[in-house]
Length: 440
Image (tube, rainbow, N blue to C red; front, side, top):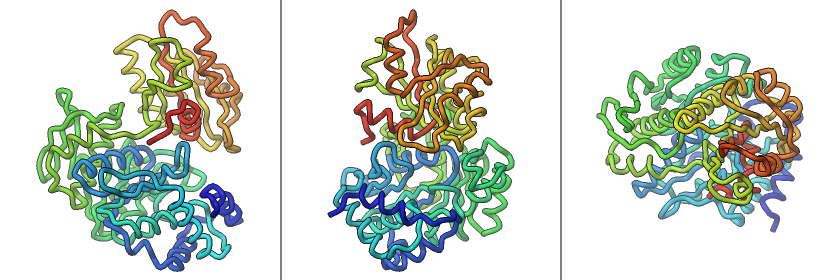
């Protein structure tokens, strides 16, 4: 039997010559597979630019705290493709097993009959096939790209459709303005289905999302209107028309995670889980885990190279708004304890590196630009360094993230540094793999 990696390599050869965002290909394949997308447990569909994965992670933690079986579909993966698919089971979901994944890929390849299809489309079909064959109480389904023409947007009537904060990203596919991107994200809204809209950093995005929710006759559930969340006295206070929840602050670091946690709670309460007791929400917020999103690394091969008492942080942020949230957190850490911030940065050429990096002017003591392994679309370290210098940052180059960490470890530091690896989820995955601490 072929491995899942063998199938993924073969799927690349099926990619259409022209990339056109539409649903025809996956709908054809799903029909050939017996329409598994019509045989799923209740679905909560999650789109947006920033915070999708964290919002899904919060929902999963809360639902599993309630003893429910939860399927999860997210992307991209950090180290292995299997991370994209969690199959709900007693005691919490687990990444899909290799033999199960390879068999699903085999069936999809046979049903597709060598017709053009993108790798995301065929692997999404395989995921939906598996979700339809394994019993669960709910499926948390994350959009891959955009929303309207994303391969996940084949679900006719989800329990709720969620849009997290929208910002500039994937402009080559989704449009050159926040309003255009929000239009694509709003494509997951459905008639009669709660449209949960998170707090938006851009007024244009909020206007578009509200207008399009109304246009399709979705049920609005908007931050600041139907629900709110804020920190009060070291607690997270959530409120909607069903009542108030006084909760612990979430385990995930960063104030932006308060918004993601609130959005997750709103999605669950709007999507049919308002009956869950407050103890379940408390346990979920305290147990949630989401790798490479302000993840503090405290052990491992690469961690061991750093000076004693150093802080080692990992975050896959890669767009301007993500950089803003990340810089805010690092500034708060600096206020709490003075340490020089050393950034190790690798980015894709498709990302707005200039405006991502401008958030760290006056905050980072130094930046080390690195390549990203096995990514032909990666921006050259020399370009990242030049953009950092343009933003007033002291910058240099290293041949890899591991080499940069080793360099930092060899140097003398009067104060143990705060080291942040960021700029790409692909880079984050590379570091987790080499550190020997892959996602669980």
